[in-house]
Amino acid sequence: MSTALKANAELALGFASSSRPSYSKPNSSHAQLSTLPSGTLPNNFSGLSMASSSGISQSKCLCSLSKNDSGESSGQNGGFTYKDVGVDIDAGSELVRRIAKMAPGIGGFGGFFPLGDHFLVAGTDGVGTKLKLAFDTGIYETIGIDLVSMSVNDIVTSGAKPLFFIDYYGTSRLDVDLAEKVIKGIVDGCQQSDCPLLGGETTEMSGFYAEGEFDLCGTAFGIVHKESVIDGKNIVAGDVLIGLPSSGVHSNGFSLVRRVLAHSGLSLKDQLPGKSVTLGEALMAPTVIYVKQVLDIISKGGVKGVAHITGGGFTDNIPRVFPKGLGAIIYNDSWEVPAIFKWIQEAGRVEDAEMRRTFNMGIGMVLVVSKGASHRILEDGNGAYCIGEVVTGEGVSYRRNV
Image 1: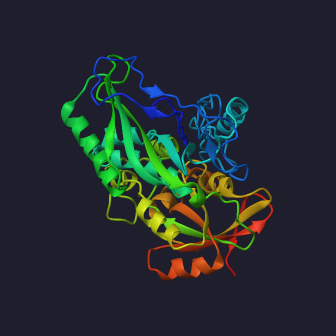
Image 2: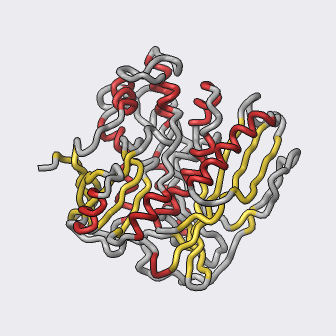
Image 3: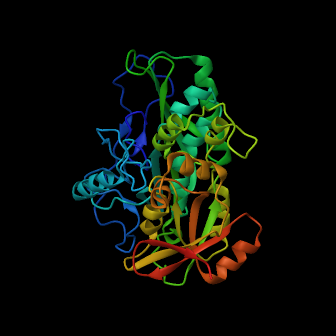
C-alpha cells in the first residue's frame, strides 16, 4: 500500500457492501463490521484470529512507518537493512501487541467468523511498493495476481477454501485501459484460486495519488469446517518442514529492493546477472498462488501447520504456527535460492539474517507435517523440498542438514 503499512498486513474487517463503480466518492466506505460473542473460538486455536465482542475480527502483522532519518545503513557490514529504508518490523510487532489489548485474538494469518459448523475466514492485503516497479516497468497485467495471492495464500494456511474476492482500486484520475489490465490480472488470480471476483470499489480521488499511479487492496473470504481447521496445536518436536518454491520476491520487501536497485548502478531494463531475463522481469514475476496445491496436500492428511512466507521471512512467520516451546531448524542449501535474491544480497551487501527476515528466499509457503506425510509429499513430484524440522526451544536457527 502507498501508506507503507505493508510488509505483512492482514486485516479482516467483515464483509464489504459496495458495488464495483464508485467514482468521485473519495470518502466512500464499504465495510460493515460483524459482531459475535467473545470466547466462541476454542482456546487451543492460539495461532488463529477470531472476531471478538468488539465487533472487529483482525489478523495483523504490520510493518511500521518509521524511517532512518539519516538515510545511512545500520547493517554491521555497511549494507542495507529493511529498517534503513523505512520498514521497521519490530515497530510493527509492537503495534500488534498494543492492538491485541483492544482486540484480543489477533495474530494469525486470517480472521475467523463462526458460521454453524464452519468458520468463515478472511484476509486483507495489498502489494506494497511493488506497485512502484509496475509504474516503472509498465508491467500491469500481473500485479492483480499478486493482489489476490497475498490474501488467498494467507487464508489457505488454515485449510480454508476461498469463496470469493473483493478489491479496491484507487487513483487520482481513472485511466480505463490501465484499470482494465490490472483488474484482468485480479480475475486471473481469482481463477487460479477457484473463487470469483465478487465486486469491489473503484474510486477517483483527485490530487491524492500521483499522476498515473494507483493503489490496490483486496480481501479474500474462505470457509473451513471447524473440525478441519489447521491450527498448529498438534505440532511436536521432530515434525518436518516442507517448503513450496516461490517464483521470486513475490510481493514484499520491495522498499529494500528499490533502495538496492537505486544504488546498484543498474536499471530495471538491465539483465539480471547470469540470467536471460531483465531485473524488471525477474522482480515483477507474479506471486505464486498456492491454494490448489496446499488444499490437495492437506486433503491427504498429516499437515499440522502452514505458514505463508511474506514480510518477516522465515524468522517471523514460521514460529507463528507453533505452540509455545517449539522452534525450527532450517537446513541451509536444501533448496536452490533464486538468482534474484543472490543479486539483492550482493548488490546491497545485505546480511544473511536480514535477508531471512525480509524475503522468502525461494520458499513461499512452509507446511509443518508428520514424518510419514513428509515422505509422501516429497515423492509426489510437486516441487516441494524438505527444508527443516521442528525442535524443542524457540525461534528459527539455521544449519547444514547432516
